[in-house]
Length: 295
DNA sequence: TAGTCGTGGAA
DNA sequence: TTTCCAAGACT
Image (cartoon, rainbow, N blue to C red; front, side, top):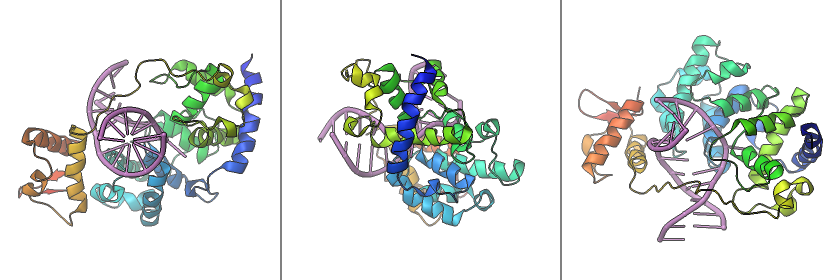
């Protein structure tokens, strides 16, 4: 079975499926700017679409260009981030806007390597922006695509814990030759993973490539590897950080220390978390002893 | 490279 | 109720 043969079996049906079932997301409209696409990709990292939508709408209305965001304090970005989670992304997105203004004439570059060099943009997001915003030919490997390919090609329920060179090779072997078609394939196979080939209970009955699926052919064997996660959240530094930063987000201006102390009882852990937030640049300790979002 | 970093909804 | 996990990046 050659890669080329796989490609023609998978890409056609998935592209047809996407044409009919794609969600109507605002960052996919023809008039979506590269900046709009970039903002969406940062927000969507580890975050469900439904939660991103309202924040993205507000964000783009307020900061329609990198220059608009770069002109404001980073704390405003952190505040507007709301409860999306992983607020360091807001900081990096602001830093990204500053870099775009200072070194890219306020524009999102189309070059993959230049994208990769920007704050908050890693392998996935660089490929995604180059593909979705500039219609280039890149292997766009996110958690959805990795899962789809694991099932379709490898015949296992879930991909490895961390991305392998083999996965990249498979993804690249499936890329259509034409850049515009490849870009459409990238978003289509991702959408298939998000809507049909889901992690929990895949809707194989609705799958356009079920007849070519190695996992299906093998009888849909259950994942037998080591536990893929073990992140208890309650009582962690992460939860503590979230509580502390929420106080600052909701406050009009700087807050006194007791306002922070009240949201977490363990003083040792609370101070450690606060120090971490300050080190990350998410909170500014003021000279008068109060705390504020960064300026 | 393994750990860290939020949040909330669905199973 | 607990567990899982949702378009990762960074160190």
